[in-house]
Image 1: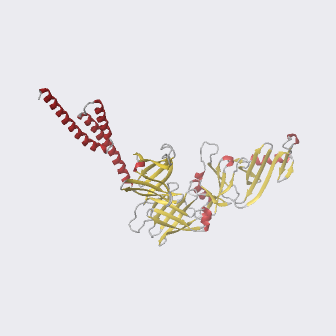
Image 2: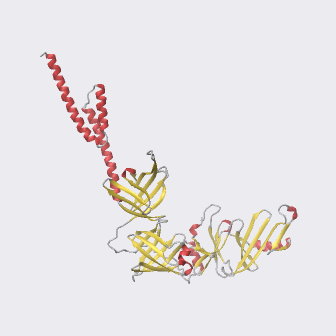
Image 3: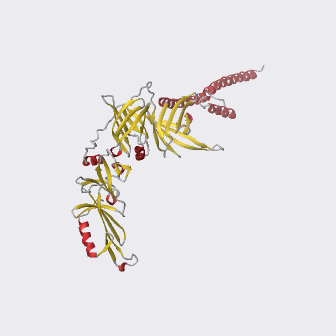
Amino acid sequence: MAPEREENRAEMGIRLMKRLKMTIFVIVFLCALSSCGRAEDLENIQMDAEGSGAEISEESIREVSDEAEEASCEGESDAYYADAELEHLMGEYEYLSDSGTGKLAIEKTSYGYDISDYESESSYRFLADSSNIETIEDNRIYMKYPEQVSSDGRAVFGYYILEYGADEIKVYYGKSSFDEAEFLYLAAKKIEAAGDVYEYEGEYNSYDVNEPALEIKKNDDGTYRIQIDLFRLYLLRDGIGEETEKGLEFAATGPGGNVVNGVIKLEEDIAAVTIFGKEWLDFAGLSEYEFYKTSDVPNIREIENTSPEATADELLDSFINGRISAADSADLTSTFYITDFNMDSEEWDAYSVGEKIDLDNDGEKELIINGPYGGIYLDARDNRVYKFAASEGTALTLSYTYYNGAVWILYSNRSSAGFEFYHMEKYEGADNFVAEMNFGEEFVDFHNAEAGIKYTLNGAEISYEEYAALCSKIFAAEVSTG
């Protein structure tokens, strides 16, 4: 055989061995890289090499494998972090929904982790899994959830943010992006109770305002002291309860000084409060409330004495300090707190605490809340604070005046050109109306100013001189509360 052929055959053998070695090397790395999605990079190197006639170098393979290993480590790190966070958050969380008690659950499955939100047993917001999670950072889970999917595969997404803390998750929702997500609710984690023994004592938050609203403290004699703050409705401040087979049964002073009865039942750390009686239902429109426990240590507030012996001044101070509400004496179901007013701001419609003046001539002072068009006057009696008088816009601007040795409530109407009308009321006790007076002036003919002006007192026409003398007495002593 010619020497040249022998040499060519040797070179071919070396190239075949190299190809075989590289093929084995490729197969091994393809298997290793396929799990992290990098195998296609190595295949691209092969195709490029074959198309160009160049050989695949070990350096190329090692370069791809190094990149794949780095990306794989990063992916595994992110996945491990997400799984660790979800594992830490596993469990059921409860919140108050329009349909009752809602449930937010995070649970581990054979496929990863599921996150679900049931507003009730028959409806839900989302039934998501780990694939719906965009990212987890700063104690927030960002979840893009397909809420609707059309027949052509197009999806309408909802954007949820689950902000988690100690045994609670705040849920935010946006229709088009995470940036516009707004607060939906706060869910408290259900804590497994030991057996059937429940401890009532502690502090419980309201689902409505996420603030302490139910305080239960055990007394030395085995009874419980109970305070229930129903936001902007009423504060049951003096409840006393005893444990029975029905739960923690209690009695407290309700609206109008009447006793109300109720029961508190615990399901793990959720306190369900029911207040009995048609009188309460007519007053509040609701008789069942739920609170979630946040502490085993109650914060019973030492509220000023508002027993039947409390003075009017003490009651009004309790209203000023936000401890009790006030009611409309004509509608006891209409109640309000001082926090319902826009207080002490620079805006034109702001309110502020004014003087205490005896406005009803009974020897006890009423409270003036200065405000737009004269604000509101409050009276205290029968262990409660009531609305005594209030402005009603430009047609009924409120003030008071001194006339004939007594204080009169004055309502003024100067809302139209060529027309003024005044109504005055005199009381001897806010619930004892004793006299009124009406007077005013108006054009005889609104279409003809030259026809003159008519002056009236209690429906009878009087002269200008009589009218001017009356106004001089009344307005000289008028006190504006706007």
